[in-house]
Structures are given as structure tokens and as C-alpha cells.
Length: 179
Image (cartoon, rainbow, N blue to C red; front, top):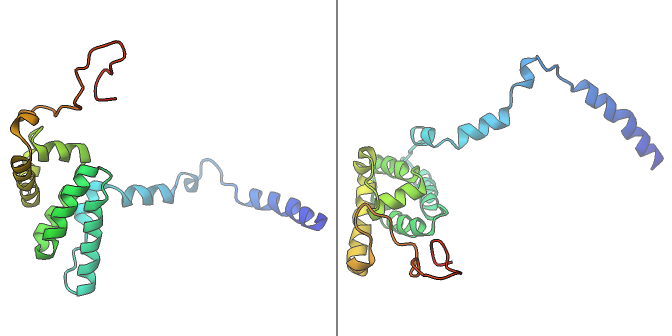
């Protein structure tokens, strides 16, 4: 045990002193891990850099599985259900341009996409012209028309009601929601 301790005490200072970099050297400013992270998770680059290879069955299967996973695991339950089911039903009949349109929809932020799909806000023209977005929005509108009474929905352009007891009066009433 003593020999191990001596070896560590003699080796560690040499390793530390040999790896020191002067603060003015350009190597100290280079952080490859952070650069890799920002390149990998940048949403603006992901749509352009997506290689859509439909040449072989294996590459098709991988791409479809990746897009299906992205549509079902967004972290926003309502969108997971809506987008996941829509992509599951339509992905096998999509061509390359529709797949690129799907990637653009999947790159949108969850709260904005939800408000645009449910009619709480008007989507920008770039999003409104997307054929995949238009098809998903049409499906959401049809489902709302078929399964929800009009009086339970907000008027177009207005936020939805947060809970059934939003207007509860009293000393212990929540400010908003059904908490």
C-alpha cells in the first residue's frame, strides 16, 4: 500500500505539470466537446444536413424508425400522440420531398406547433405552406369537429381554458388553473 501511495505522489505532479497549457495559447480556447454538441443539436442545420437515402431497404428502415421515434418522443404528450399516429400512418407512402417537409415540422418548437395545429394562433406562412403541416392540421381540425362540442373550444385566435375551475372564488382559490 505504501508503494502505491509513493507511486501516485510521484506520478501525479509530473502528469499535471506536463499537461499545463499557457493561458494565451490557442489550444486552451479550443473546446471540441462543446463544438460537437452545438453542431449536433442545432435545429437549423439538422434539416439541411439530413441525408435522405431511400436507395436500400435498410437505409429506408433506419430513416423511418428515426423519424417515427422523433415524432412519438417529443416530450409533449398531445403532440406525441397526434404526430406519432399521423407519421405512423403516412411515413411509408412519403417521397423524399414529403420526408424533408416532415423533418421541418419535427424541428418546430412544441408550444408553437401545438398552438398552430389547434388554431390558437396563426402559423407563419413558411409553416402554413408545408404540406405535412397542412395534412396534420387538417386531421386535428377534423378530430376536433367530430369529437368536441364547439362550446368547449376557444374561439379561433384565443387561448384554451386551462381548467374547469379557473374562476373559483374564495380565499384558497388558485390564481389560474385547477391546482
